[in-house]
Amino acid sequence: MDYDVIICGAGPAGLSTGISTLFVNRDAKVLILESREEVGEEKCAEGLSESWFLKMSDYGSLLRKKLNEKCFENDMYGMIIHLPNEEKIRIKLNERQGWVLNKDYFLKNLAEIFEYMGGEIRTGVSASQPIVKDNKIEGIETSDGKTISGKYFVDATGVSQNIWRKALGINDPLDKNEIEICFQYKVTGCNINDHDLIHLYFSNELAPGGYAWVFPKGADKANVGLGCQGSRVNSTFPLMQKFWKKLKIDGDVISKKGGTVSTFGIPKSIFWSNLVCVGASARFTNPIHGGGTGPALFSGYLLGKHMAKSIRNDAPIDESLMDYQDEVKSTLGREHKNFYRLKTLFQNLDDEELNIILSSINNDEWIRIMNLTKQDALRIIARISKKNLKLGLKIPKYLRL
Image 1 (cartoon, rainbow, N blue to C red):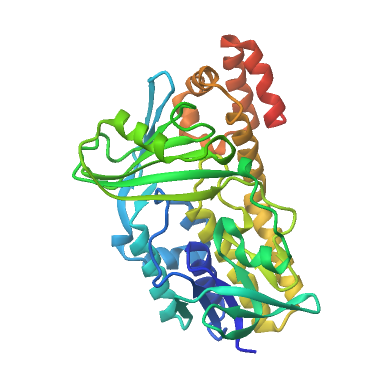
Image 2: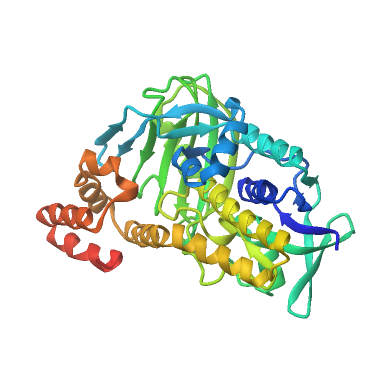
């Protein structure tokens, strides 16, 4: 056997899985395959909440200390919600909530940490075909004509699930209702007001079934983009041009990139035999706002921990992967399910209904928006019902309250 663990994809999920495995078991032999010529930039707004490092216990503390401060390009203290009717809700806290990353540097730094700990990365090499025999993965055929054998195989290829779908013979296209089609400009030389706040724009005219954003990377540069429900648009580029004109931000567009983001619910099973999914491949991306870096790091931490212990103790593969699945679902599952229901609701609202709902949430509730209780939700629905009874009655059906 060539490796204990073969990871396909050097994004945050794949790299975190590799680092976590070696954090627990430095003797493990871990390989990451990355199809791009170098580890680096991904198509995303680059936001990351500080809370994810706290959730990862000692591993999170180690990772935060090892990461260079250049990874964290701009501190974020809150957000401005732009309603369809042009009203704004401004939420700013005294303590930092997270960062807008330099994602290219962040991923390269994670790769350096992984290699320093003894891991191996092969860039410019993709896993072209899993070799399935006797109901398990025996090896991977790579794009450079080689075959590599391993004990564990990890699909960290993102929303496409390249290895998982090939191994299980899944040929159906991705459900367009469950993905967001995104487009983003990187802008420099601009003047960003409130550059320590994330700016979110909700409007079916601007971004049907999604939202638009400005993630400042300082006072004079930003990521400006939008994401739309895949079933509602053929192309996001015309909408991106319209949003850019609306903003009237002076500056130079230095890059234009598109991509696809998962808004799926978490599937019943995220492993099969000795093949396991992590990060966006496991559908852990937040379905309401599309944030994937935090869940990718966290799920990689849990997966690496369980694989490393199994390798060290020569424990059964399926037991370790079931333990990973149980733990990640117990920590992320309920929250993800609630966000998925909320996403489904928002994608079935017109702009007038969006105005009513968003304006019915008070500042204290916005501050706690990721941790609202059932009682909070019922109080918000009561306010909505006073403005529009039909809408107030519609919401519990989606949220299953």
